[in-house]
Image (cartoon, rainbow, N blue to C red; front, side):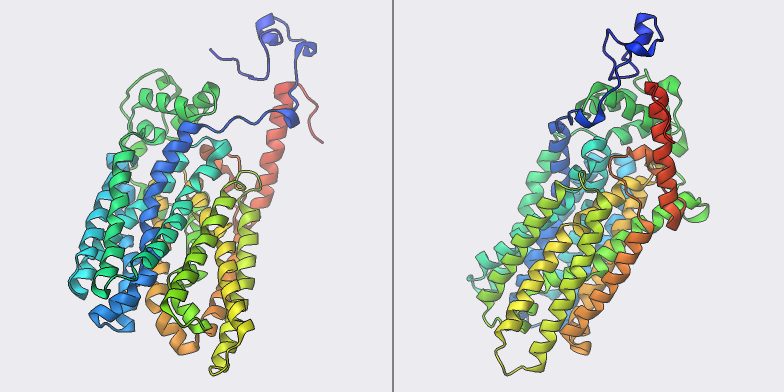
Length: 536
């Protein structure tokens, strides 16, 4: 049996030497402890699972350019374009709503494969579409796959990751959404020179290819250890945790925490397979969420769903997907110039998303989220001012205003990608208790896609009604409300085990006092453990 204190050597463990004298106790200098190397197996698993998010990113990016040629080829209106673009997010509601239950039933891994298969069929249907109705059928099928993919990727990554690198690993879904957007932009530019009736079909149909590679890659991934425990497969969960933890001691601690969260007795720890109570299998979750929620569950639901609401209500999808129209309004006249400018947006988004992943576990969620939201508000106001000035002087070539619009678009995407983008997925996937995680994350994804769909289906009509500058002033106002929400209600979760999250929530705006009390308790426990004086 492993030593209870990993900082005691064999020669200095007082229990082992039969002495209780503190002179034999080596107190660790926490400041000089080496950070464990990142677990490469957990890293590989998180990357593979998160690649499902490339499906949504590619669709978002490619539709920004494909709609130009679809409108020409099929002769459809702006309203039909809005519906075509936005409804995939509404359809994703269906996928995300049932994905939680599906993943509890067949497992996280096979749910990823299922999502890839559905999107593969949808992409083929869109690529082979002969008319608008056929294209909408393909959008519906692809939307179901997107809903599944968006729910399951962050859940799997959070459940397989050790606490020390969970922020880094669970930010990968946003990384791959961003990478997918960039691929979509590049695809637009690459196929733009084909005949109009072929170009957009290649742009959409080529999206089926990533699904194939993804489904094959997932076959080599392990199942989520938390799902295995919920099914009573303790032995399998133990072996997965030993591979995905930074040490065997951590694997044992994680397994004990998961068993406790699932309501399983300590007496089961050495068994391979056990019979799990109905509640531990994820039954009656909806009753706990909607009919009898505790203050803790209410707080978690508020912030878990709220962070997704504000992520999309900031208008980021309008910036990303309608960027060719924004650049057209800003004064870029040719389709080639506008498509090249959108590639610059994709590059900016990709770079800053990658940068943010390395700071999530160093700086923390709150600092990145608040700075990201504040910076985006400033950029949206700058973009709104530039577009308003250009609208006021339509016959003049205002170089400074055009440059301002392009710069503010790139910076808005950069600020979003440095915090609000990845943290919405990281935060919502880590705060839900084990018994509520799949369904809770599904509700967050549903809110995310619903708001995105509403914005995309109304953006053209919105800016035609209140001007495009007015639309971005509106999004900036929403961003200010989002900053207040984040500052007031979201506790810092960096470095905490998933099973410890519940203690942080339940006090709503008074979470800081709860967090301080937990830190004091932690210090007292460390003092008792090492024989140190208690903090005053």
